[in-house]
Image (cartoon, rainbow, N blue to C red; front, top):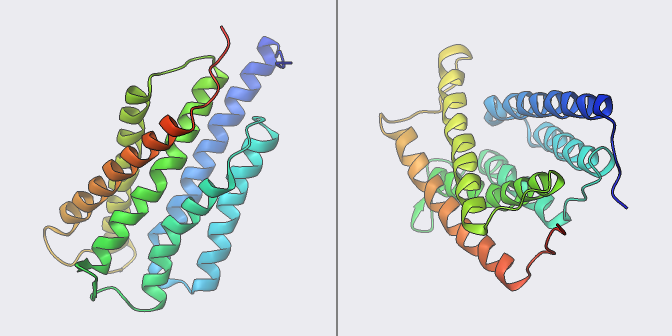
Length: 204
């Protein structure tokens, strides 16, 4: 049976959701902006705390249970960057591309499925169902926006914290190019999974 909230309760839940979203955005920014200069242990702890907070908030406050595979995707998106710093792989080739290009490909690619799932479940809670094509379009733009924000964080790291993240004038554009490729490929695969394993329709 669907839980019915009073108007005052809905207002509190909306405020809570907004506050949580802002807190998660700030926490992720804190994690990413200085990630290359922390030890792998500290980065792992920060990542687990952020992803766990995301899971428990959805599970116990929104009554939405994220599939664990999506949590592993989020951890993998960060883990590729952490592993590259730990094993000093940046500046070296990783298969046909540089490792930096690989991480900017795989990070957004792994972030897309959780994004499209979260958007779908959030809209479902409001009894809104978008066609998969439109759901994919919004998810691509959201994921790509976060990839672009990461490039801004790299710039801020150089300008305000003395880091060195941008090595050439085209570094950010090249990173975003690989990020977009990863997002588009991941979108195609995610929609294929949705087609093979369709979700239950919302009852009108």
